[in-house]
Amino acid sequence: MCGVENTAVTRKLARTSLQYKELAARVGRQLKLCKRKNSSLKVLAKHKLVDLVDELVVSSKLKMLLESELRNCKKKKQPCGRTWTMENKLFALAIYKRSARAYRFLRQHLVLPSESTLKSLLHNIKLEPGILKPVLSVLQNLVLRMHTPEKNCVILFDEVFLSGGLFYNSANGSVDGFEDYGERGWTTLTADHALVFMVQGVGKHKWTQPVAYYLLNKTCPTHAQTPDI
Image 1 (spheres, rainbow, N blue to C red):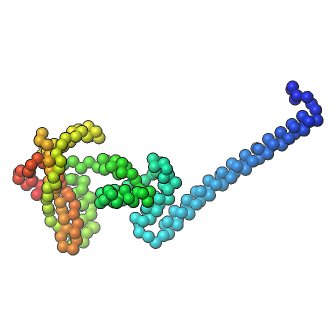
Image 2: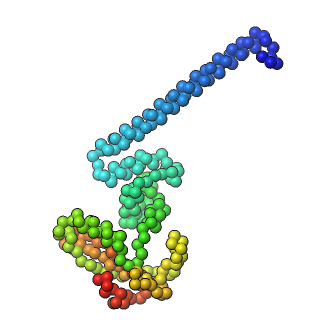
């Protein structure tokens, strides 16, 4: 060895060094093998959990909640890393629209999408003033699966008062809050209430679905209502 005296002590240290080097390499190989086995066990455990959830005799919604809980439970400290299916988002949105306070309470105990995630989903749904054609399309498909008594319905309309004002919609790059008759145009007046048309089931089958709305100033003229009715 260059610069080192070739003595019995140095030769012994060199042999010991080589032994430790070989031991470190052997431990490294064993560690890699253990990591591969651990990864395989995690995948197996995940599949077992999925199979276990599938075998549970519970409702489809509860099964969906369990799957999302298992998928995201380890990410509670990093909410931005959670993943949600569209079914997760729609179910959470249905709860949120019924009661925002109840939804916030549930989020303290269950792993559910954040309010910003739900609002982002709503922004992707374009429901401009006028006849809500996407809603009518969905309603048409639902009616095909209804029994005859369930199809009996009436058309209702009602007014909802608004706090009039204009605001900039950054998502669309437009100013909202004007009186708006949908396809029949808009005015420069500030809307202070909304006129909503609804279809409602009669008899035992109570269901209600808004199908059109308009943003109005004061009252809606008759000639603007007649075409929709």
